[in-house]
Image (cartoon, rainbow, N blue to C red):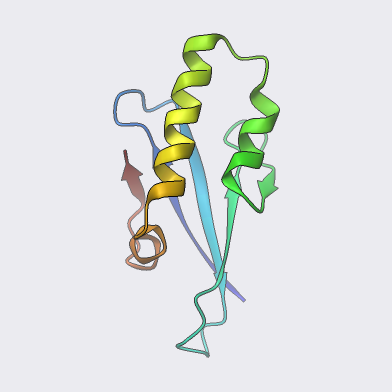
Length: 93
């Protein structure tokens, strides 16, 4: 399995970011891969982007809003996989 990654972050505050990874079989051109999300502070990998948020429950309210905005943007990005396969290092929302 090969791994490619992109950093997804808020344009308004670049400190809010999540690394999105895709693991795929490079010998199979039809393999869309499996997406994981890496916690920016701990380096822990999760299967869904909302799991990354679950460990930030002690953030202040304004920071929580920014994290939620980023997670929502990632979840709603229908072209996210394509952007990562296009080797975009940084994807801003």
